[in-house]
Image (cartoon, rainbow, N blue to C red; front, side):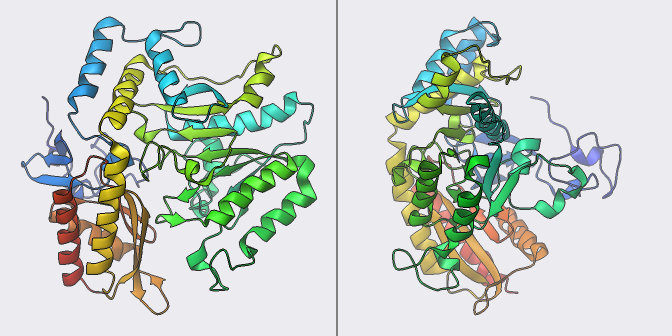
Length: 449
């Protein structure tokens, strides 16, 4: 295996000779402070010095079944030895068909087709296009407004970026973005000004959206709903709010796409998060856990109404990318989804997720800089604050420093603008959870702002 010492390229913070530009970073990002990862095994990563880290970020939330998973590796190699690539533009292949069928079987029966993409961003992109084109073919050419939530995140393609509510101040250099997008505040009980949780509330959080829909129903194509705001520090929407969004879609003839890219495939314990609310979305956007992050793959599940429109005429869905439905990625997906069932991964997520959040709440919630701890399954947000009374968020620079301290102790976490997010792999064991809590408690006891 080839390894490269990045310090051979970078001897100072700003060096144009280092060849790689990292995502979401200034070109002068201090490379010396990045881990140089060269090996992975199970839930652990190893750097060039042989130091071991427990990966409680699951790669970028996507490596659900661990590094070096033999079943996934074998499935990829077997497919590689048979056929490495097949263009789905003009051909079909049993591996791609089986992967689509396996995903479809995890969903309600009214979903009739799986359209493969290369990423979560592309999945949301496709959902936006489908929403608008559906109504175009239905003779409603002005029905093209897309509604999204103010604190949502949907990706970095032009369409998916345009419907992302967070970080909009950083998008000014990309304008004009995709137009006819409307944002509304999400319904979050613990942030309600009325201090009155569902079902004893008036659901004021939905009134602005409801009024807009009522006044513009002939122009609204769809709603893109992230049912759990993962990038916003694991913000949990109220059940009543989510169900009410579905009711609005039903009442005003609006398509609903749920973005399950981050939480789909058992991250919260359910196969898909929307299933616990008995929603009936028209599309489901997915990626990340679809094949444990071994190769780029995403997908959109599409309902019968939309499929029937395209089957009944000559309309063609003008979307596709060269590697979407890549056979190696599909083979990895088949092996991953099979293991989810064989390992009863849902039970592991629910039991160890509860144990993790209970331990965190009992051991660090009292800390001065901890404002809140919340989560579903194995996605947990720890809000870091300056002061518990006003719950003002800790400065980003200080959150970065805490994340760095955790990393030095061998724990990799994810940082949100509200604090630290934990996304352990779905195969995590109790001993791993104990280590995660031990390190976090140690650092939080030491670092006080």
